[in-house]
Length: 297
View 1: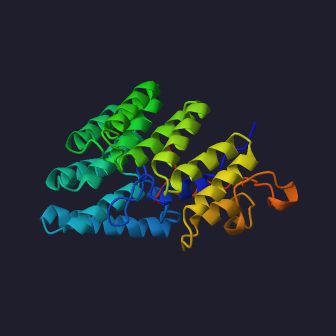
View 2: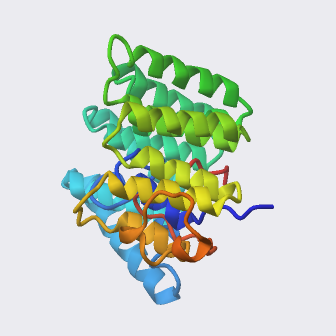
View 3: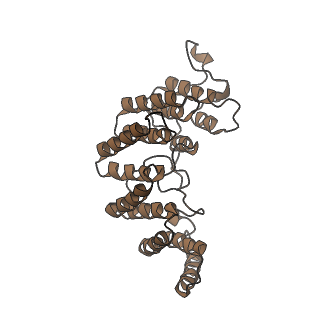
């Protein structure tokens, strides 16, 4: 079975700005998934509890600032007190309706507690206001996939892409298409995903992301030569760029000279550089951006 591209490589793809993370970093550096950090010892947990109690008191007195309320949500998640965190986050989301990140985090929190209907309800509120909000679409797609509704999610994304492609292709087609391609991969439709990425690379001839997505797909399919060629073509679209993330993907595959690599063809193996090797890396604790459609907790 061909090795899958490393989690870090996918994260780098999305960190190039393809799509924002599902449930990743939201507002002010606090996010769901931090509950394992800072609570490794009894002393550190006691410190977290003391700070949470102080903020609870300020909240009860009506003197807690918005930043302090957000900090309290973070601490409650660290303490794994998700029910209290949910109640407070609902209040914050209602008080600050323009801060869509709060409702997105609330949806992720509902999903994390297996309340998928509530998560979907929050996401629909976001999408009713902003149908192209890619962060909400990502999480909605994930929820639908987890519930066996992948075909429904795929149909919705295709409809949005078609709408955004007339009379001319609009910028939002790129993140929508990348999300569609990832969904197709999750559903085992690798040929369809490859076609999606190829069309995106044609529609957005200056953007390296579709080619990087294609490279990751080819690597997962066990075709390192095609993966290296696509990665080199992605580099060509960033001449002189100081962004090293494409090179970091290459490094994770054992490609040491991507900047000199050229798209392929007929050269003997020893002139094409080393064969890319995927290195499996442990999944890091949740940071932003997180790579891909995640499986249910």
